[in-house]
Amino acid sequence: MNTTLALLLVASQALAAEPKAERDLAYAEPRNPRQTIDIYTPAEGTDHPIVFWIHGGGWVQGDKAQVNNKPQAFADRGYVLVSINYRLLPEATIQQMAQDVAKAIHWTCDRAKDYGGDASRIYIMGHSAGAQLAALVSTDDRYLQAEGLSLKIVKGCVPVDGDTYDVPLQIATEPEKPSKSHAEKFGSPEMQKELSPVTHVASGKHIPPFFILYVADNPLTGAQAHRLAEVLQAAGIRAVEFGAEGKTHGTINADLGLADDKATVALWAFMMSG
Image 1 (spheres, one colour):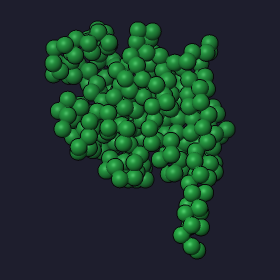
Image 2 (cartoon, helix red, strand yellow):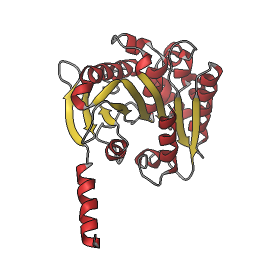
Image 3 (cartoon, one colour):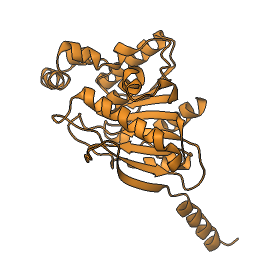
């Protein structure tokens, strides 16, 4: 085969592998743009595990379209990628955001086969504020139970550079101005504890394994990652920490899915081991 034909073959294979996309699907009624889903499906096959992605943005901004390399990267590995919008402050509380996440998972499970997915194999992932929501829904089983679901369907949780797995600890250790901001967002001390994933960790709840990804030289997200891993491991739940070198809060998310990204390589290893 000459070089030209080889290049054409590679190009055609790449085109064939491009994931199918359906966008702006409503998972709640009445329709709200903040309660919609984008789904990216491998071009071929059925019964693919599902990656459920929750964007960041400090609970006040962000959008499901901000997926960077993830649709192609996960499709190449045989995963359906579901990226969601959820209501934001001040329209909704953080507790209601977690309810939106569970409702979107329910909608996805009901229609998984329509998109080549397997509703019994879901990985919940998120960046920043989305990391807190991913970890919360993966530890506090009441959110999925309210939707008639169980944590048994969740095969793994991947929170990316979150700083609020233990909200009271975060508020106590963060500089004064941001600390007040988080206190306002999370509410009373009781709600701060209630919305902390570490509060709900216990054995016997089918809490899934965790791959906790954080920026290596960020002491705040590093401390929160260590805290979450420590609590999970004490309950006998597998928790893998990965400190990504040379990353920022933005690039750790934007680069996830790139072939030469070390955090991505570690993520694939974690998912394969499950």
